[in-house]
Image (cartoon, rainbow, N blue to C red; front, side, top):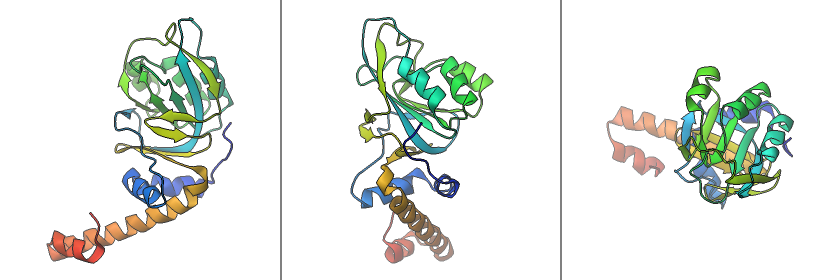
Amino acid sequence: MTEQQYDSATITAFEQISTASVSDALQSLGPHGYLSSDINLVTGRKIVGPAVTVREIPTTEEVPPTHALEAIDAATQGDVIVIDVGAERDVAAWGGLMTAGAVANGLAGVILDAGVRDVEEIDRDFAGFTVFARTTSPATTLGRFKTVASGEPVVVGGVTINPGDLIVADRDGVVAIPRDLVEQTLAGAQDIEDREREQTRLILESGSLATGLAKYNRI
């Protein structure tokens, strides 16, 4: 279970805002929270939800991903599983059975600093479940990686993500917002979106990109 939940109004508000605006708003507060562009949308749609973290390390043991399986069952509806393998990433840290467990528990999606497999199965049987990953791969983690912890900080896509940080992810990419900056980031992102809508209107009405840039100084 995540350490902090967010009210439905906050989740809904972020669902209406692009990750580009969220990223800009967060960066204005100091940290950058955008994950490496190597982590892309594989299946599903935009998601917003608290992070449930899992860490894996290399191994030669053939052991199941215990911490990930337990995290899936213990997570709260709307949570986002975030898995860090911390090494070679051309293996699948997620597949069809884990997706079934996530769907059964109402989770929003998963962010993988690794690969995903069973994509055909996920699309066929769990259409709409969201997976962001570095790659697709048929290779199992068994005998290559093992889970060693859940519910502690991980580094995914070059960003440190703590349990309960808010994940906002769409086709532009993934942003992780530290829990203590969520409200400020939301306010800043909403302001950016409002100004961009007005700037777009001005550009279209004036027929000039330069006119919009001169007034709002944003591109």
